[in-house]
Image (tube, rainbow, N blue to C red; front, side, top):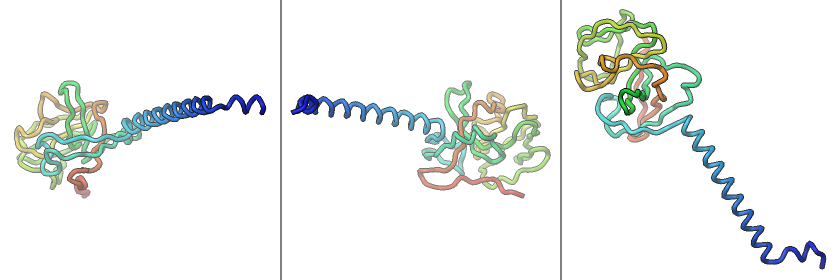
Length: 188
């Protein structure tokens, strides 16, 4: 018998297998950690709390969130975004009504952006009138689809006002539970 063959006793085989098993677990944990890091920064899941987005979203809906798109562009009209404002202490789900440089007002329950009335078939209720606001640089005007007075904390409320782009944490892609698409504004 050679010296190498003598070294591979049953005891040393078990030790080699343990070492291989430990490295397998370390690789598994590292790959899992990397996958979680990537998924946390690319996608997310959020549960809707409240009725501010009725009739599009309802209390208890589970949303799939797209975070990756924030690296490649800015929200556009009609997008449903997740806003995490430090003043609130929690996240809100709202629809983008206007972007930087736009003028927004509400007259007789109709929302105007740059003096053009929005066709909003996805809303519920009649909003209170609001004097014209000009949206600042890197800001968005967001509103809930439920426009009944007091039903939604959004940019119409002076306590919140327009939100800064850095407070947008992602886009709502689809409602996973119950499963349905999210309505978008009509293109005229």
